[in-house]
Image 1 (cartoon, rainbow, N blue to C red):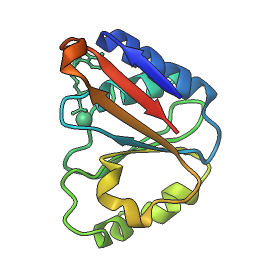
Image 2: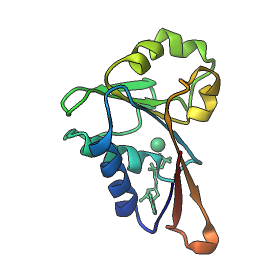
Image 3: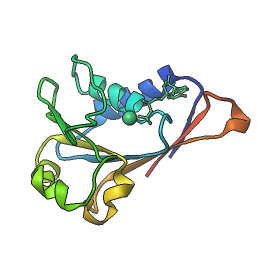
Image 4: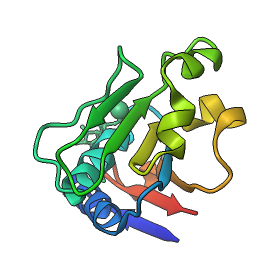
Length: 139
Ligand code: ADP
Ligand code: MG
């Protein structure tokens, strides 16, 4: 499925819809260049799960856990990961196998340990379509 957005609010809205429909144990991956809108979409997804507190990229912690929504939400940002073994140390397996909803920003960096059953989200710019244009591909 491909969705095109032209401003951050529309991307946020895509996130809300994904969050509203998310099922226990669902794993989302999010791939795209810096500043493309991964965190905007994640914030929408958190809102769709009923999380009220602000969600930012957990840049220095790898994973941030939010418990106040309809389902637990595990937000990973693996941008600064040095080695996939660091994921073992934070208990990646347990989160991903659990009943909460996991979302991994920069998932391409840990491709070898991702579960097979997952929802991949790719966000891309296309400057010919305008500075705020984003193409969101969900598979
Ligand atoms: P990332 O997490 O991928 O590094 P962010 O979500 O932090 O990126 O930032 C995306 C930036 O792009 C924000 O400043 C946002 O306002 C801007 N932006 C412009 N157009 C869009 C759009 N269509 N969708 C998402 N973000 C957009
Ligand atoms: Mg981000």
